[in-house]
Image (cartoon, rainbow, N blue to C red):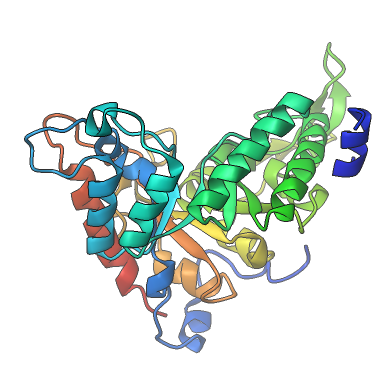
Length: 350
């Protein structure tokens, strides 16, 4: 349904998919040896340093709160920030910081807010519409061009649920677009598992087999490209490559299909304005196949990925490492990892 129809109810891929994850060095060479991530595009999601954003004043000597942490982020060299909440310790100001105050800190440090893992409503009602308008208000105060969520559109394996999610995302995406914002969804590995869309039905009338279409790739096709955008977490996409490679076809036969994160982006590169540049060290003994590391210390070939995904200079990669905080034993670790990761990002050429 269109946004207009829903409001009324309340009264009032083709493309460059052939580019693979490996064996494309000749393509990279053809792109020259320029910076793959220009300085204005180098970003960080503040979830990586969440321990220091939320820290109360202490004697560690490590920055805490938005004013000090953002100043350090800018000093390292980052120019873009993706938010993962807008709160800090009330011990800093004696109250909670406001979006207007955060915007001033950004401006004072030459930083640009370029997205947020905010809350995208799970239903469309007058109350959730009003709540989402408030989310957009905050995004506008902070000067964002994108607004999104850290969750997949639905955790379901079933086509019918993804159809419902697409209606909802098209609706809220149109609301965001009316305010000059791109609504994006962030992926985890399960979003690239195979859609259950065929075969015999189970006791609840749900399909039990797959035509071989992956869940999020189905979502690409049923959402409006004017209103719905994507942020690939490149680490979790590689976890999906490790985990989700077989399915049972409509005839009950096992099939193998190895997921290719790079080809998935290259086929629709303009729908991926944002990325999470999260690195991982290969470890097949783990369920996920990787363990997180600072950028440049893992096995994911970011030079190859950024050189061959198309639209060079268009994308905005945000460094992320879920495991960066070091706790009370090492309060400075997340900011050290931020610096190590920035150095690698700034040196990528192709």
